[in-house]
Amino acid sequence: MLVLHGPNLNLLGRREPEIYGSVSLEAINQKLRQLAEAQNARVTTLQSNHEGTLVDAIQDAFGVHDGLAINPAAYTHTSVAIRDAIAAIEIPTVEVHLSNIHQREPFRHHSYIAPVAIGQICGFGARSYTLGLQALLDWLRARDSRTAQAE
Ligand code: CA2
Image 1 (cartoon, protein in one colour):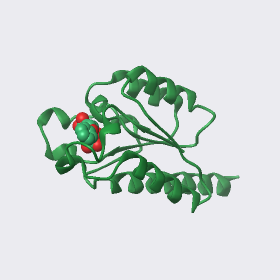
Image 2 (cartoon, protein in one colour):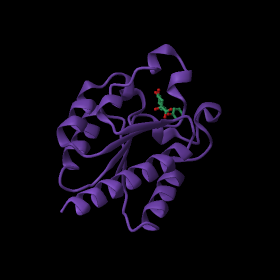
Image 3 (tube, protein in one colour):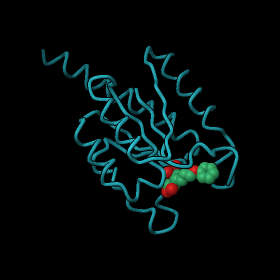
Image 4 (cartoon, protein in one colour):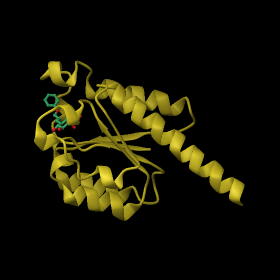
């Protein structure tokens, strides 16, 4: 599994805890690694403040990773490039947000990513990531068992 974190999420736990909580990004990544390993999966994580770096990481996931969990952060609301990269690689993708973007300012209500994701999880703080990764693992297993049955 590839887990991508967008711009400013490196500040987690250090700024604006009232909105984004007090858990650091490294603590979230550690939790995700543990959750995956307990289910015989592996997680690679990357945070970047740069749209092109995230696009490169998504393109490079093709043929390498089975699933993608991404918190595109502010790029959620602006990035056709990230959306196009996700659509192009056709790797099942879950969109994750710490905050409930639908409860916040109107400019956060629209996601360019949602239409190319299998689902979106938002509003549960750091737990959104574990819920998102679990949803992704469950979805992939259900797909694989459907494929095995059909064969
Ligand atoms: O709720 C989320 O996870 C967001 O993706 C976070 C983005 C925001 O632009 C989205 O609308 C919703 C912002 C990430 C900024 O992260 C910070 C973390 C700590 C301190 C300051 C910013």
